[in-house]
Length: 73
Image (tube, rainbow, N blue to C red; front, side, top):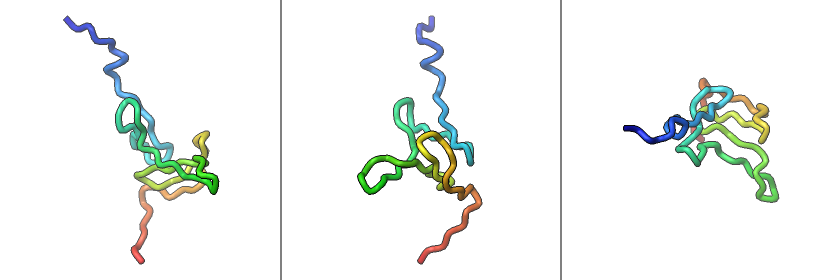
């Protein structure tokens, strides 16, 4: 007999608006990368997969996408 709540068994989704990858590490922690301003306050966030930047309201500020090619200096 199962007594677990079915809502607890569902995994949370926090998909990147650009690459659609799930950003949840687990049910409490996100993989979103915080971008700090000069006062060490989180001003924006970045997707660790496609490197696109967003405001805290999820509005796109910098678009890189999954096809971004970067070289090493």
